[in-house]
Structure formats: structure tokens, C-alpha cells
Amino acid sequence: MGLTPPQLKPLIDVEHLTRAFGAREQRVTVLDDLSFGVPRRSLFAIAGPSGSGKSTLLNLLTGLDRPTSGRVLFDGLELRARSENQLARWRGRHVGIVFQFFQLIPTLTALENVMLALELGASKTFRRADWRERALACLQEVGAATLADRLPSKMSGGQQQRIAIARALANDPPVLVADEPTGNLDSRSARDVFDVLAGLTDDGKTVIFVSHATELAARATAGIELLDGRIIDQHGAAPAVPQPA
Image (cartoon, rainbow, N blue to C red; front, side, top):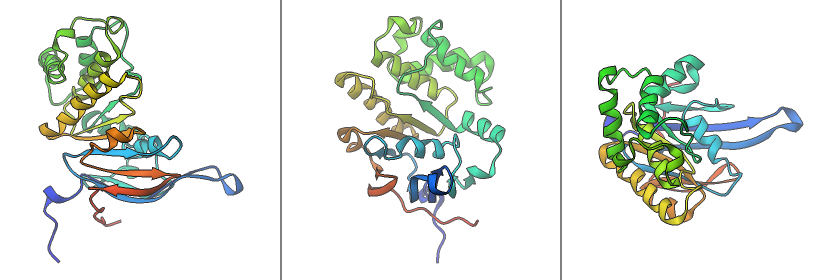
């Protein structure tokens, strides 16, 4: 059997992933034996109703939580085999996170919020002397360059989310994850923000987003739908490529 070309292998392999909380009769299984692959440069949806396990899965994919059993491999790297410090450094270079409620620093301008991500990430890609230029480029990429000197309190929700996306892009991670990124926005702002996220795949990013909005999930190039911790539907989700244990 021939080898799978690297460009065709999923960026993320999920193998028999289970997450349970509690013990014995108090045990609650939130995710139950999930296996799938996230294709490279895809817009990947994790859909399902509230309580289906979406956010728990996102935490496992980014190493913020550890599985009860099974594995998550990022480009062949097994996340559960890394220490908390190693995972924190790995996330700083490989994953940009976009939150539902923006989480911008209210006393910093848009530009300063993006530059802070470079400082906290101790960027190895961009020199300190280039941080301002890099932050401006990220704002430009999300269509928010004119907001560079504005404080979050002077922005709409959609504008704040654009700044949050620019911040997630600061260290040039290959993956962006977004947990209900449009859940706090009106319908027009939600469409605009989603268009920004979708466009990032044209630049080679893999974007993984959680949503209970079926119209947004339908726009994804690949994804899974969860119900009670199990996959009930999927499209374009590459089969996980088994890795040596």
C-alpha cells in the first residue's frame, strides 16, 4: 500500500476520542468515541445543539483539555503526550483563538490589542521592531485598518470581533479556532465576520469554528455534527489516518 502524500493527510487526526467527567455511577460521557480528520486549509464546522459537546471538543483539539481516552494528533504531534508548558508554547505558535465575547483589553487600542498578542506569544516569527507593522498588516487583512487607534468601547460588536480575529492572526498560526464567533452579533455583522473567517482559508489557514447556526455550518467546506456527544453527520471530514501509538 502506498504512502499518503503529506498534502492529502488531514492536518488534525482525531482517533477514538472520548471525554468523560466523574467516576463510577456519577460518570458523565460528554464525547463518545469520535474519529475524524480535519483537512488542511479547510473551513471546518463543529455543529450541533447546546450541550452536544462542541466546546469540549474544541478544547481537546487545542490541548486546553485532555481526553479520557483516544488521541488528537496535530500534523503527527500527539497533544496528550506534551506537558502543560509545552502545550502553551505550542498553542502560541500554532493556534489562534477567537472568542464569542471578543475579550479585548478595553484600555488598549485595536493596534495595541493585536501587538499584545505578539508580545505574549514571544513571537519567533516577527522581530520586536516589526511588531507594529505586523499588527497593522493583520488589521488590514480583516478590513479593520481604519480602527487601529480606536478603543474597543468606540467600536461595534462586529468591529470588535474583527480586531479579535486580527489578534488571533498576529503570530501567523496555521490554525484558527473560533467558539461561536458570531453568537454575540446581529445577523448582518455575523455574516460579515464569517466572511472574514472564510476568506482566511484562501491564505492557507485552517479555520475550525463551533456553531449552532445551521446556515453558517452549511457554508463550511467540511465538518461534523454532534448530538449527545456522538457524530451524527459529517461532510468533507477526511478519515483520520491511523498513527503509530
